[in-house]
Amino acid sequence: MFIVSLILLTGLYFSSCAKVEDDETEPPVISDVRINKNDTLMYGNLVVKINDSLNDNPNRMDTVIATKWMYIYARFTDNEGLSTFKVEINPEYRDKRGRENVKDSIMPIIKLGQMIFNQKDITVYRNRLVQIPDTITRTRKDGDKLVMDTLVLTQKIYDMKVAVIDKAGNGDSIMDYKVVLMNRKALYDVRVGQE
Image (cartoon, rainbow, N blue to C red):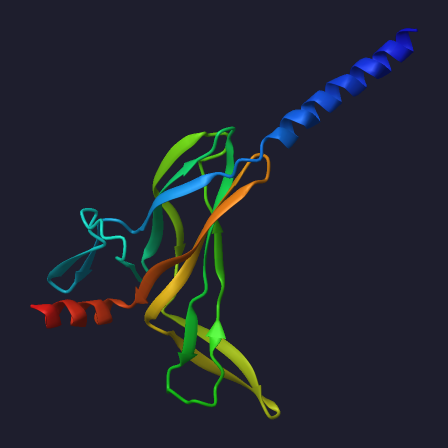
């Protein structure tokens, strides 16, 4: 009788735990995403402010400078508790000599976020993600020889994905958050050209 009671209680306990997990179907929400908010850049004697926090235009695009750290600011909410988030971007690199017959290279960058587990409503500030290189080296085969090429970052507007998952496995994502990737000199040339 004791063994039967133990088995029934154990089964009842685990079935009640599973029921709680199954009831959580509301997906988490991402809002207020910004990349490198209020960032500054020194170029010679010029101090350039980028991604002004006062710019609340919904069509704005945040700028990421190659080789600088990329930080995310975002608000994540869920009714039961968050698990993790990730940021994904796929920078393109081209042959620096501009040869059309050399294939582009795409280097996917995926970075998991930190500090949100078990939170129900949290805003992350300056969560450091990654440094995007302005050049990469590629080794390719040219006949019988191995040839090394230096590829440079294609400076353009990129789609970035920000995704969040709650503890029950439900997810939400912003698929087309736009960011501009450029190097320091290009930003300097744009800013000097504006004045």
